[in-house]
Image (cartoon, rainbow, N blue to C red; front, side):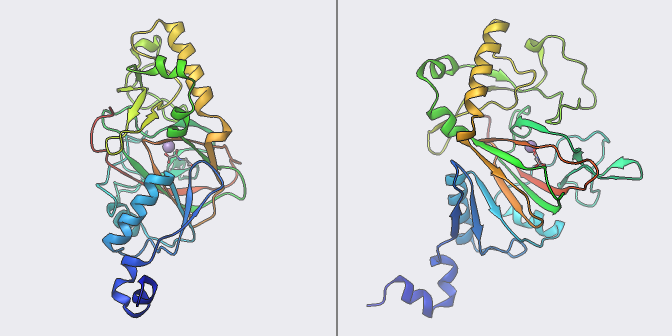
Length: 302
Ligand code: OGA
Ligand code: MN
């Protein structure tokens, strides 16, 4: 009798269907390296669904040693969903005019002007663009040039954070909505066209449930967005501050996080609604250039 492995060996056409994906989970509560994928190639639908399965399970996938063009990055991203263009940047025009769907994350300046977002400072814990009604469900970040040290990126698993929340905090967070600040980016820089915030109860940005229900599995995760200028609707200011401080200090414990130390050629993919992330500062005299895409969310957070 010929079992699976034998069939695989003799029928190259079925290899992409039966070959298990080479997944190496990190020693962390989320994150896995995926080996053997070349993101410059078109992948079979079977391979795409295996990657999606791993993505659901590990939330952050790491593909090392990729050599991809901007066209490749767009094509690869589109295998997983519809492109969601970047939010507005300070210059009112795309960083890459020939590729407006690509965002640039960089501290490099050319002709006195930044070629990308976020500079060289710390980016505080956040999920991307949750200030919009339908935030992107995923993002991909490709490392083109990285500094010799610093600029590590951390992700925290918001399912684990919810599951381990003390019952009292679960009860306090249930049915509550929080405001996600639209006026500042994760480097703390005010976006064009927004005023100063004088009363956080009037922070501009989408209102989303503090506890998100995954529409496919029914599982709950914390959905915090970003801490600065957040406010829990309906609570007194001090109650809102207290609840948010407790939720954030729980959610950002090291036990729930993974750390990514970048190598050139890394392609990171994260499920934006399942995790939060932050980035370390790095030496301003070094260069860091990343190209980035994101995938449209399907529906409002519930
Ligand atoms: C982002 C982001 C972190 C980094 O692209 O959304 O937060 O490591 N980047 O540059
Ligand atoms: Mn981000």
